[in-house]
Image (cartoon, rainbow, N blue to C red; front, side):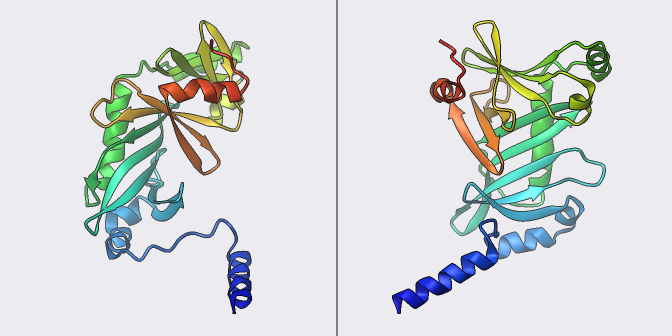
Length: 230
């Protein structure tokens, strides 16, 4: 009997593939996905980092995507973290805000944009035309995205195509020396919900995996990338 059960499980895994989505049977989530706002913002259910997530790709005119990480409290769904992949005047703003704990309701889809606006207030944006002109002149452009502890992070563009495709190389500045990180990893500045001015951690995206790194973990992460900051 055990062998038969194992065989059936193996068939199911092979048929569905490793990327199969977990089907969530929460009525609250199902009702939310049927709402007009959810449909207008192209919201769908996914599992990321083994957690339930509502992904909002935004309306057709939006250039933002938000990941709303959910948790269940007393049978109700709450948003615990929000990951934003946004841009303002062609400048990317990747961020994570944790410790949110807002109930899933009609205002949920507004919260990502509200966080984006608040975080943008504290970032000195560079003019996109100035960046394009510099790149056209064969200059390398480093756009600061935030500091965590003694680490300064940048998006680096070396040519116009990189900038046009929103495909930067992420750079860390260690004691005045700028060093590149792994090309296929994206850096997100991480904030606590009660302080959107000063990043407290970073998040690193590699594929659909996001890991949070506190200040004391960043140095080991950089060492693993052959970046020595000491």
